[in-house]
Length: 532
Ligand code: AMP
Image 1 (cartoon, rainbow, N blue to C red):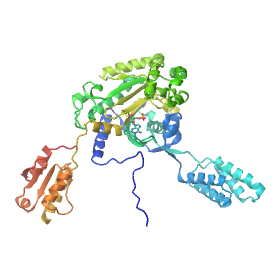
Image 2 (image 1 turned 90 degrees about the horizontal axis):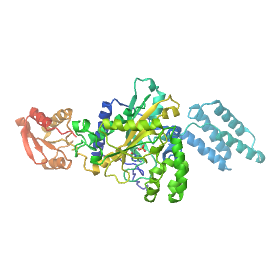
Image 3 (image 1 turned 30 degrees about the horizontal axis):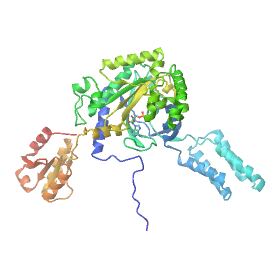
């Protein structure tokens, strides 16, 4: 007998179920509304791209590219690689293996699953020749070497990766579609899953979700950076994290406190940190000074930081290791090494923050993990999250578009970690409960089902969440189910109600009941509308 396997979501990924998913939708919907009010349009991006795109933009030395990406090749390429390894190792069945390999390469070339280049065609022909050449012990070894040489040098096409972040894709799309010819700055936002093979823990998943935005164009005016942060704080206020937001709800109205008032984030536990990490002019000399200083204190650092001195010294500043903190505080600071242009940019950014009532904390250690950042970097932390408390990170990446083969372009953006936003809202008691059902229609008798169906359709059309039992239920059982489902009202339809032309609407929280005509029913419910 086959054993019944119980499937579970794999490590680091998870399901988001109702009613939690409704709160997610509200948060994402609020992002759409706020970002669109600031002139951003949605870009829907592919979930996977060429691995090389991320390696080039995020940086080959980063953790993300070095060890966290989910990379893969098409099935047929995997099969070719498998057969190649088989030929490398196997003596027996060598001939059928070679024939199978040739068939796979032919198939892959015909279907263009591997590049149809002249070189690939030539190598395939050579493989055919080798396969037809006579087999004998002395030639055998040489023949095998030649076969492996041809297949190893074949261009099997690029490897792909599930996206670990989306800025690289946005830049790729910006270039691919010639978006630089659009008038003004190009302002885009995206919402969706990202993938990183990290060690799972609270607030850290292998499939996680981001809401991000990017501004691409010719200007790097600090007002662009400040407006982007203003929009972020505006969003956080609207969802209930941040000053001016009504505690207890994810949908406070856009009132003066949220939009017009000062965006004092610290008051509610959100903290904005910002920094300038310089540009191509001044950063290299700072990194050199930092590296030299790190070499001197190497013995006082742990293995991770020691490794980073060579590969990515800026990342040492990210260290949370307690024993390293005093050492890090004594290291040279980027702020003292900025070139005049970067210095001015940072000063102007502070003025732009002040103009908008944005309060943040300058933090020279905020370097962010990715290679492409220049000048402005920022991060927002939220309460209730333990060590993974960053809910948003972002910064400027002038030069990234050029690095990816596009025209000289300035850019800035951020990514909000939606999983952590939802966790913080939940842990700080700011997630409004949403009833899964507004009206549960309790019907009794064949005639009542028709009324129930008609009324349910009307109420649903008016935007209410309505539940109609598919089968007739006993009155008590039906009310009991309505209560357990968390319905706000039960609408009772039986023979008496039909005869009287008035339906009974029972509020389940306090059992208060009203007799209403159809018209009155809609009017009453609309007046009492709480759509979460
Ligand atoms: P990054 O793209 O690394 O700058 O991350 C931006 C934001 O995404 C962070 O501030 C987190 O809120 C969120 N984030 C990054 N990695 C993860 C992860 N593995 N799980 C959950 N959220 C994440």
